[in-house]
Image (cartoon, rainbow, N blue to C red; front, side):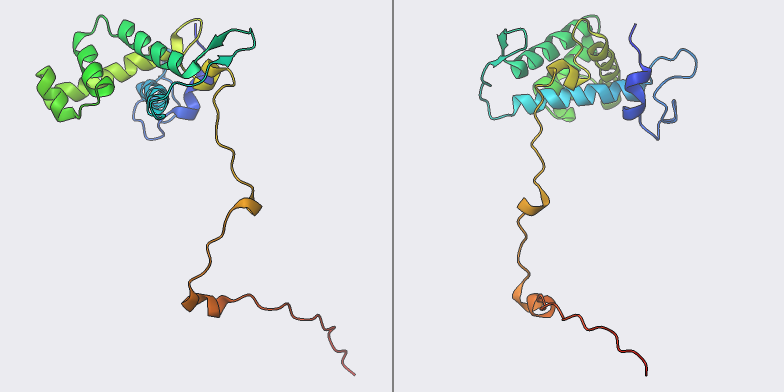
Length: 194
């Protein structure tokens, strides 16, 4: 059983009417729907970021166990497979996922292709986000969420530049003359009263 208390508080919606920002439902300790939807959005965002890295394959990386793989492509494949398996018993949600999230159609075009009403479409979106958020977090042995644990240290974040490396834009000329740096004034000791 997954320890949801470790995952829920940081991503819970503080304005959620169900959990009031705690991330868990009152009775059973199950995660709130807002947490499951947030997990889906995080994992889906990472899968999209990998997909839009320029259409190039990443170089194979060697893992600590000396096996080679392409973690980004493996993550995308796991995202698609886990989603397909989790939505196998939900045909409307599977169709919405395929049209809206995989094919990239906007909601109106998705509604036309699936032949469903606007309200039905968005209810299906919320249901599939909850289903997939739970599936991404509870998949064993390697859950897709948290993403950093899936990549086991392979997730790279661009380092922030040091303050000295940041380029400063010059002031416009009409302003620069008023704020031009002045030469430091000499220190003069205070005069003593006689």
